[in-house]
Length: 398
Image 1 (tube, one colour):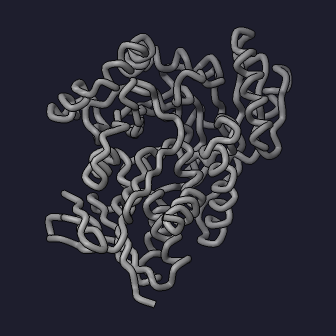
Image 2 (cartoon, rainbow, N blue to C red):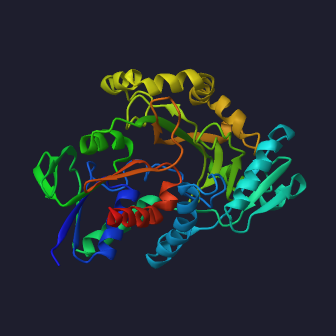
Image 3 (cartoon, helix red, strand yellow):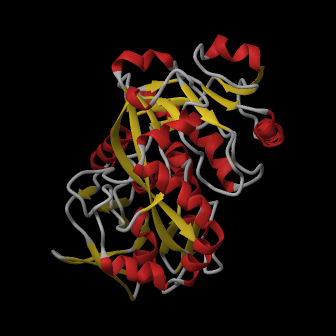
């Protein structure tokens, strides 16, 4: 059978998982990954909280819910095979007062419909049995929610691709995509790379690269910076695993929470502040060209009008450690502003439709040999191996 070459734009965990799945499934397929940074998993993959989600939050029957359940078990098996860290430290979702109980009850019903393994409702008096320093009136305990090192997983996936005969091209930014008879041409600074099929998993730049590939304008990516605090070593043991708030269903963000990392450190965060650069990990990182494009997009303006109050509160928490921790200490009262230090930040690629609505589920399109992953929101890292199965299945169908 004639060998085919499939190009993957993006060396994050989703693109690499797709490349590995293609290599595993089709022995006659050579995978070429184009990554603009000098390392794999440089952006969303390497800047998230490392949580392996169990599926509490996602609408039952949605692609998110389906791929999270499948992806979690696949990831656990993969980490075991590759001797990568995978720690089931558990998650406690806490309702701090009676005003949250209606949302809490809805979350529990949702999680049970999704078949979250080992899920248990805990009364306020039982919270301290799981997290001795947490406080609230009720909680959901998900014992199989885990933590891992997604950057290490990404590197392992890249090694799998290369062992199968593929190539991972670092520091190779894609500058254009053109269809040709029988295939696709991928333009980079090094020249033109002909491939038979193309998969775009460009994360923070998914909308731009996808538009080169298929001409569709939307949804657009709006970058949100998530800033973390880190607990001082003297108070690190106040948190055993993960402590989360009851999420607001109006937003795809989970709110400020406590997360233990595989390194043993405990982080608080992230918040969600509009970033003024797609890779703007610091407040001073500003791109005027990107800002003009953002403000010019009708979807952004409509989103801003609808959610400016929430944005203002997030900005306050960004500027003031005391304000940031005022929210966090509702869940762990013994932790204050003097017990944390500013840590790193991540950027979330939030897809927004032209009507201003926040895209909450995966958006994956297939057309004439080009697959575009236009939106791969959390839990994309958890679901990455299942997303890869789904994408390769759909590629075969098309």
